[in-house]
Structure formats: C-alpha cells, structure tokens
Amino acid sequence: MTLLSESSIALGVVTVLLAITVVLLARSLRKQIRRGKEYASARDSFESRMRDAEARALAAAKERHSAETHTVEVEAYAEEFRDEVRHLVSARLPALALNLISSHHPVPGLLHESLAGSHDALLLDSVLEHVSVSLLKERRRVDAAARAALRGTNQDAQALSYRLQTEIDELQHEFSAPQSLTSRLLQADHLNEQLLRLLQKSAVAYGAWPGHVRKDTYVTEIIGGASSRLRGFERIQIISRLRSSDIGVVGRAAEPIAMACAELMANALEHSRDDLMVEVSVLQTGNGNVCITFDDSGTGMTAEATIRGTRLLSGDQQEVMLTDLGDPPSQGFAAVGQLVADYGFAVSINHQSAYGGVRAVLSIPPNLLTSMNEEAKPPSAMAPLPASAPQVRKRPTTASTAQPAAPEPTRSPAAAADAGAAPELPQRNRRTLAVSAIEDAAPRYKPQDPRRAQDTWNDFQEGLASGRVNTDSEETP
Image (tube, rainbow, N blue to C red; front, side, top):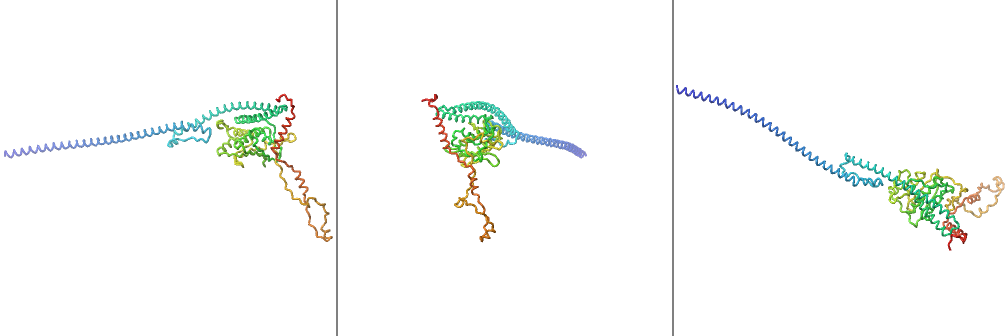
C-alpha cells in the first residue's frame, strides 16, 4: 500500500511538473511568438525604412546627376554665349559698319545656330540694331558737317574761278595783245574751265546749286559748250539730228543740263581709249522730248556698277554720303542725280553702245524746252547744223520729158470718130516741173567740215595778228 501510494504521489508530482512545464512552455512559446511578431514587424519596418532610404538615395543620385548635367549644359551655353559675344565684337559689328557704307558687304549671322530664336540671340540682334541706328546718326551728323564745309569751300573757289574767267575773257578781247599771249590766254581759259567744272561738280554733289544762271540757250550750243569744258574735247563728235534749229532750253535748266552733259561726256572720254571718238547725238522724239545720247567705245560697266550708277542717277535716292562715293570720291553721277532731282530731266545708263561700250541717254522733257528766235539771237557758228530734210527721189528724165511740147488741142471722142480715127484715152499730165520746183526749194544742208572750221579760225587769227600795230608796247622784239 505504501509503495502504491508513493508511486501515485510520484506520478502526481510528475504530472504536476509536466503540467507546469507545459504551462511554462506554452507561456514561453507565446512569448516567442509575440517576440517573433515584434521582430518581424521591426524587420518589416526596417526594410521599409531601408527601401525608403534607398529610394531617397536613388532620387538624390538622380538629382545630383541631373544637377551635374544641368551644370554642364549651363557651362556649355555660357561658353557658346561668350563665343557669340566675341563673334559679335570681332566680326559682326565691323561687318555692320561696312554694310552701312556699301550694302554688298554681308553681315555674318550667329556663330552657333543652336542659339537661333533664343532670348540671348534676340538680345544680340537688338545690340546690332541699336549700334546701327547710333552709327547712322553719327555718320549723318559727321557727313553733314563735312558736306557743309566742302560746299562752302567749293562755292568760294567757284566764285573766284568765275572772276578769273571774266578777267581772262576780257584779256582775250584785247586786240593789242600779241598772238602768242592770246594763244596762252586761250589755254589758260580752257584750264580754268576744267577747274570750274570740277568745283561745280563737287559743290552740286554736296548740295549746292550750279552757281551760274543762263538765258534761254540752243540745245546744240549747250552740248558744244559742255564739251569745251573737258580735256580731250577734240575726240567728241557732235551730230545733230534735229529737224529744226530753233529748239532751246529754258534758262533755269540750261546750266544744269550743260553740267550733266559735261559729266556724261567726261565719263565717256575717261572709259575710252585716247585714239577713239565719243559720239554725241541729239534728236527730238515723237512725244516732244529732246534726247541726247552719248556713245563710247570702252569696256562697258559691270552689273554692280550699272545698278549703283542707276541708283545715283535716278533722282529719288536719299542723301548720298561722302563715304558712299569711294576713295577718291566719284562725284559725277552723284552730282547729275542731284540735278535730275532738282530740275526734272532724266538720265539712264543701262544701255549698250553700238561700239561695245556704254550708251548714256539724257532726256529733256517738253516743259524745259523753248523755241528760240533765230533772228533776234542767231545760233553759234560753231554749233552743229540740223539734219537735212529727207530728199524726194526724182523721176528719171528723158529727151521727151526734158523739153515738154506745147499742149495739143483736146479733141472730143465724137470729133475723133468723125475724123475716122480711133478715140484716144484720157491722158494724165505729169507734174514734173512742180515736183522739181519743190525739190529745189527744199533746204539742203552740208555737214560741217572740222578742217575747214580750223582753217577759218587760223585765217582769222592771222588776219588779227597782221592788223596789229607793229609798235605795240606789249610786244617784245
């Protein structure tokens, strides 16, 4: 009994211990489960934080890369802009200054096309525009001052040259002067005419008026007087195709047209060889204009020179600056263009001469023309003669028509029938004598012979010299 009870007690104790152990194990298991959950939650939280940190790190890396890329782009853009500024200063602005002088000098564009249309490119273009406006204002101010100074100087020199011309002209009419002195005076007069033309051209090109007023003048005399102002005038051949010799130019336009003719003839002489003639023709067109053509035998003009000359001669161009005339300045076309604008005639040079050079045409409108009284003021003996009238072709004369017989009495057809003869057809009387009378009455002009004119002038000088008193005090032995 005792052993059984001890075994039962021992078994009970073991059972209690096992129960306690189970309880403790269950409690420990719950703790482990709770701690595992806590550890899992902590791990998930840590992993989440790690993922967030990695995401932030990746975003930071992307931002850093983007910042680095942007920095590189900004530095490259800044370098391109610095290159554009250097290109603006070193190339574009000097080219702009040349372009303002002559439009055939191009202004370069942007150095980097990637900047086209950007704000900085527009800023650079605005700099060019402001500089252009400032340069034009300054150029106009400086050019106006220079033109005023040159205009005043040329006008003063022109007035003195006119006084010198008057003195030389009075000396030429001194019949007591020796022939050698008269010849030297003629040479001095011609040199003064050339100097006066240069001064007049400069003054008109700079905005002055021609400085000389004429009365109504024959067209042919204007052309002849213009040729006498030039060196090499003997190479100019003037041909008049006018049907009437009384055509003149009104006084207010006579000197301007003479000046324009002189400049066009000077240009033709300059661009032709010294052994070639310059042909000047004058005719009246059907619309009443008088056209003067100047044909040279030079090499012609380039397309660019023709465009520039046409612009200068058009008369509607803006004020021409001194720097636009070249170095040395070519003032001829500029002066003629100023006269065209002021007086209303026209000049064109865009034609080719029949001799391969340039044909310049000066057209005088009817409002600048007038009819001269040839009895009150006869034309100069040195002026070219007008064109001869067209000749009527004469009929060939025979022996029977040379001496017309007396007219026979006219017989009627009835009388002829009574006489037994066949009736004659009606006859038409030819007016040979009337046509011949009209042809004889038509004026016949002979072309002027330069040698004969020279011989006449030499005979006049020889007669003038022989008529002088041999005891003239001005003549040296």
